[in-house]
Length: 154
Length: 137
Image (cartoon, rainbow over the protein chains, first blue to last red):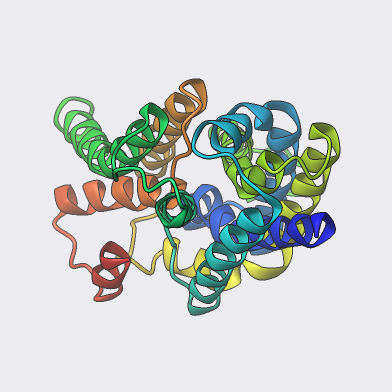
């Protein structure tokens, strides 16, 4: 059972890797400096390094502070999230992978017998709010940055 | 573009460095992939991190072609200007950094797409219908 849940975790990591390198190398590819395969290496190798070095912060927070996972929960969460993200990767859609994963954890939390109210729990609330706010804030930031840049520097 | 021992343009070098740094932060953030398995206490932390890094690497190398095409020009044809690329990468990088510091998982796709859309709004670009589906999802 444990092995299965680890394998499911690897499956999620595989799909997330496929989906997320695009974010860092897509813009670089636009600048037409490097070929596609060089870009892939630039995206993929640092991603592994970053996980090794700093990965435990987010992982511990997600793993312990939302619910107490049993092996079955872990398997279900991983499979549900992994399949959705895999489908998105094949279709070529940049999927909000963290949303998918966090919400599938919250889904399992709701289904459990404790029947907690939806937004209870400090970490859960923080994660959901952060996920909802971040794309908008990022859009506003890049908009104002390019506005300032084109107004004052060109 | 230069290779074979020829000088590389320093501006491009900085851009590549930023992209690599963004990848590092993204890898750190993407560790939520194994959070469920880790939380169930299936394996020690170091082993899980190693497995995670390997799977992320493999996924990135083998399966990412179509998504890369979407981000790089599928949303709207991004002009290949260096400043535009810089701003997309930096504003996305900033938020992933915040996410890592606060230990919150963060969808880098959403952030990058958000940054690209912000630029597109300023440049008055016409968005492709793909964006609609991305936002919906």
